[in-house]
Image (cartoon, rainbow, N blue to C red; front, side):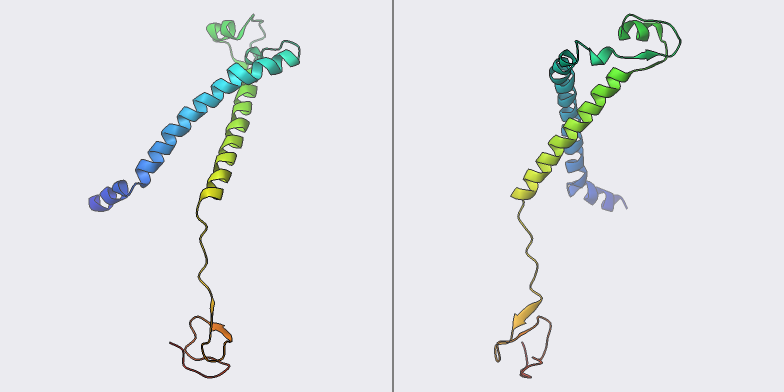
Length: 142
């Protein structure tokens, strides 16, 4: 079992997965920064100077000046702005991944299916590749 596990690790499956996970985490950080620092400020400006990251509903009935004050008090809240930013990040990340996979599929070599038929050298009729005799001319196939 130890030998099998070693082979599994060496074959590259785990290494490829780890590299993908690390790059995915780094890419998610970049996308989150893009959404928070580049995309959401202009969207907020277009919607009347709304700072989405500070939109929240305090559940304890009190009023807080900012999200930082709410978190400092430890009050429970529905953080709409944080959720909206996360949804936007998710959509952007999904679109970028879609475009990357679409590009990869265009570059990846296409697998050509093995032919299911062959041409009989005697009568030139199409016959199954596995045929031992041609059903048209009864010639023996190699």
